[in-house]
Length: 225
Image 1 (cartoon, rainbow, N blue to C red):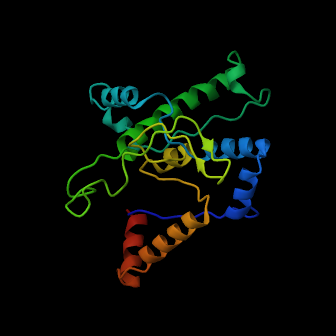
Image 2 (cartoon, rainbow, N blue to C red):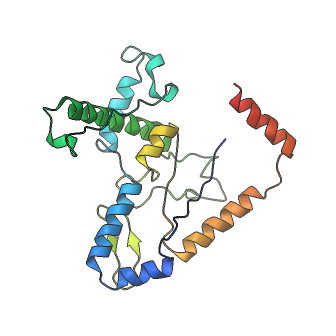
């Protein structure tokens, strides 16, 4: 089973308004938008490059190193500690017991997210899946271009967002942590992108499929397991 979701932000700018602001050389707006988008989704691991994450994940997947029952994929995600009522930035107050517990949890959070990303979000081209005689290249468009820093074309307003790993889907770390599975998150910054996604989703959900009562039985069985 998988899910397609579109979130519309009430009061947000239209693609045309966004383009006008981006081409008007409004530095403050550009800076704020980049910070917002880079905070919403990511294209690289949180604790290092692919080789570093791979080494760590392969190590903990050894049953002699970590009990399979403690695999984060089969356990409820660890909830964060209570916020410190004295300090706003826990990283700056290591001697505070509550701040330190938050910092320690965030470290475990980052490591867990990277394990999920390594195990579920990386693309591996293979024959019969994304490569076949009809699609000699990868039909999923991997590997992706590596972009070290987010850039904005001053003429067109086109944004090229930072993306550090060529075979990694873009993701939101909180969503990945909670879903414990493969996710692909992106923002629709142009009318063309919005139309393409709407057309794809409409085509997808109108495919001939299961009868309603059969679908309901499947949903019921999932929740009653």
